Image (tube, rainbow, N blue to C red):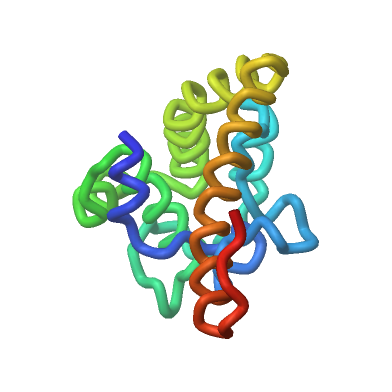
Amino acid sequence: MLDAIATSKRILSLKDPQSKMSKSSPDIQSRILLTDSAAQICSKIRAAVTDSVAKITYDPIDRPGTSNLLTILAACTNEDIADLTQRYEGKGHAHLKGDVASAVEELIKGPRSEFERLRYETGYLDRVARSGAEKAKARSQVTLNEVRVTLGLGTVA
């Protein structure tokens, strides 16, 4: 299911479809977070920038907001944008936004649930952190020894 995201086009900001969706944007309404609830996702998608043209078409240059919603929906459902555009013939942005919100929620509910489960397993997280630190230390020691040998300073045990 996550392969759909990797193969999709660039996902744009919900508030400024001229720029990429980014976690560093100061506007929290511009992005979907793994920790967002279904209600928050729905609210953010409903408030996403589109335009006043009633017909749903894919035109990233002239209709970046609508095109972004179609791109997000295609990424979540692994459907072709052309097929999606046909499906929304005669329907408006409200219908599209509702479907996008549902598809995003469906895609991330499993990973969100796993994240929520793991975030309170402090013993497990401590073990993962210690293991990662040990691996990083071992790798950095190799590099440090190479640098020391190159500089003629010998090796460190």
